[in-house]
Length: 195
Image (cartoon, rainbow, N blue to C red):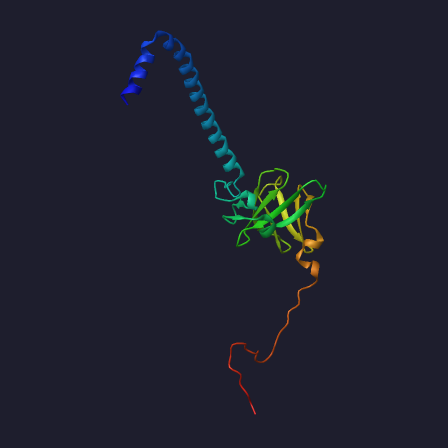
């Protein structure tokens, strides 16, 4: 231990060694500082990549995960998937589509557009001839109606979106109701044998 101390002391006392050691120390310190900065930058870029690549890490202000197909619906007050909860309509010009989502009581309808148009919320109104329409008391708003089993959206008396007949509820024909008379067999009930 003493011999190492003496060698270090001799190095410091020797003026030539001081002149040689100074540039070497400067280069080593600079290299050390540079490598620390590079390591930090590398760690930050890895953290950014991990957060950007993490699936499901894209929640909006309502907690809806867009990468899983969820979007916020004001009328349902919930995160929904349009293709599950909405009715899809195609633009009459074929350039875009829209979805209609109804509130649980059907008093309101929310329109979602594929072309970036902001969502619209419309109120249900009774029609004089019977049935309903969803709109706002303004001639310039959209108007939703169910006509011959097909949902349509019009504006200023011009149809702008229409549901594909194949996607309408009536595409499989009229609903059939079957009625039974008498007692129905019960799978969990004990068998009753009559002789």
